[in-house]
Length: 189
Length: 189
Image (cartoon, each protein chain N blue to C red):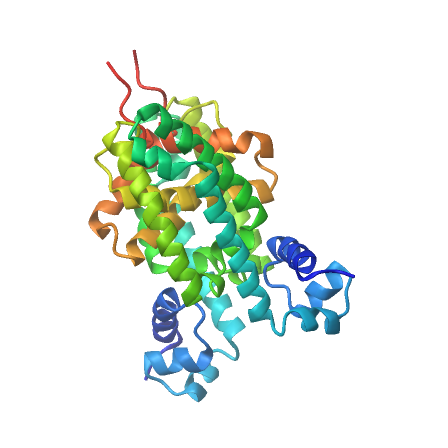
């Protein structure tokens, strides 16, 4: 007997790899009947909404586990730097697990998820501003841009992983150094 | 009398802002009847395919106009650096004009567009490899990652623009400095 959660996990995994899959395709891929899938989720939209909910929960969980609010409040460069590293590492895992939701147009336009996303982003932006004040991030670019740049880099990282171009275990480090140090050669001595 | 091209341009603009719009919604937004829209594009899928074709053409045009093949062949750091700047500036314009196609799951899984995209990406990767050999880009990260990172940053840039967080005229510069220099503070003297 599969629970709602089991089915959602399996459906997410299938949609990550086959984002245009229909309900029939999802049911068949995860080994349940179409009728069973529809008993759990009345429509593809309902399934996508549940999947978006879970991705948003994960995002919130990563902000929490990285301790960004405490680091923001402390204003300490060391704490902020550590929280930034922890955040990007957690985000890489989220992007891999919820890759479909990361860019899906339907999921990204559901009003309740948009509202929840905006709340989370405000905390992220406050964190980036604290990083700027502490000299951990450049002060000459808008803090909101950092939030968009990280989101974009996660989309790229996820794509890179999906195509087998980068090893999963290296991705956190690659993302962090790309974001912080850039891709140009190291500045001269 | 609107041509196919006119309708495609207007439809793209509407989908950029309203990515889940139906054929009826698109027709109404661009001021034509649903029957007229269907005469030009038999289905939403056909419209999206045409729109993806055009986005891919634009991408190819940007590789051409930035002169990446000549710069790759020259191996000259100055030429490579100039081509990289021109490429990212052209891409920012493309990402704004074809934002919908940038992440749409259906468009990004059309086999002919995937194949064409892979060809273009091979040229891009050869260009990044030449940049690495010439010391324009770091040699300690995979060249394919640069391609994914640029794609991701464009998704982020487009999102930032759509939400009015960054001025359009600044975006090329912001993208280039984020990609090359990163977001950490400048290295000390």
